Length: 132
Image (cartoon, rainbow, N blue to C red):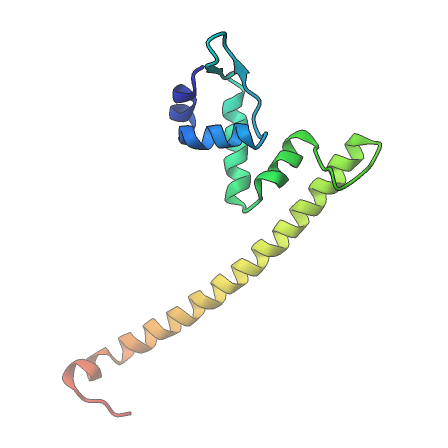
């Protein structure tokens, strides 16, 4: 499949697909005319990349998850390296998400209180009767 078809199927821009290729997130074969040729399985890979980007992972972290490439860790057993690194990345990301959710919940509570207060006092403000 051509890059324009892949972009249409995944909803990802051609520019982003080229960026994913440059960062090593996707593997692409080339035709004799040097056009990119994408296998059908790349659609799932692109969707996975989008999911991880949406979670806030970096392209380097995503590459490590997809291809077990963790240059900072020297482990002979590739499977244990993959599982350990992936576990650490997920645990760190989960902690960040929990922290973000708490901040959002706090902000929501504050806004709800402000809205309730403003609605309760709307009539006084509109009539100019401010008893404060």
